[in-house]
Length: 380
Image (cartoon, rainbow, N blue to C red; front, side, top):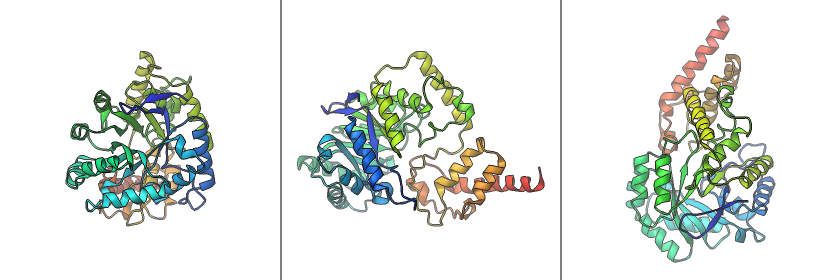
């Protein structure tokens, strides 16, 4: 395992961190397969991985208790544990202490090493963090020894990121979405550089864009050299940069853990040359021309009040660039609730990290696939 400085914290973190929002599930598709998940997490720690990231609502609130159980038997002392305050769910300032105490109990620990205000946007920054005095509460919890380092995760625009970054002088670290596609999205590379310049550690989430960069269309994949897998190219793009402290991977099976540990063992700053970076830039251009909906399947939008499988519908729609019309229609017909069931309540839009406007997209998707079906039935 390779290690990197976590900004000015004095802590060295593994180049690869374990993101705990995509654990393997049992047959019901909802319950974490505890035995497999714990085995995966412990094997990664045994291999030198020392950064574990979870959150209050991951896996419908199953993730934190699972992580707490996995870190028994001395494993807690081997890792830097990160979790997040669900700012978007807070209704009053006192909720901070309620959530934090609950998280400490779930995680079976007396302190959290890296504590984040979860998924900040300009709106939650101004109307929750500042309005509820959460920065003072973070400092108080730090002074009491309940958390060690103060940070935030982020999903909004570059200017909002800079407002938050520069709005508090005691940030120790931040967590941003970044990959070779998102260099101009959300925090952007400029935001990454600005955070590092202020001495913050930078944690990277969605390095594979919700798995999209691991399962590229043939047109996009052919832009990449076959010397490395699409996954390794995506991770190396980030490990190449000196500003990056740790990359989180939401690993869902043992093979993912094994492969990512292998990739991490080869990682170092400056590992890509100009030609390889240019190749990734060309890949980004082709990808963006073909992209339909930027859903990463994080499932923050679920459950839908009207029964839609929102990520599932977007996955079917995104695959139309590769699938035949027959395959698309077959997959769509298999859905119990289709896109036309959307009632434009916009509940999902208020929580979506990618700011996807489902209220306008769902009618379009239903119309597009219904048209495909009609053409097939006519033999067109």
